Length: 69
Image: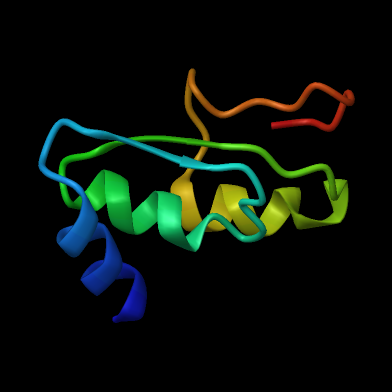
């Protein structure tokens, strides 16, 4: 709920939300669900499965370190 409140308070639909420490991509999922563009980065490959579960896999979800998506 906090993510939804912050995204709503500081952005408008169509705005870009950047999360440089995305973790499990919770903010990205909330932002995308609220009509925002969302970009995030996470260096911990062990979180990749959780990110895919939270966001689904698609053409905009990828890994630079060779992890499968």
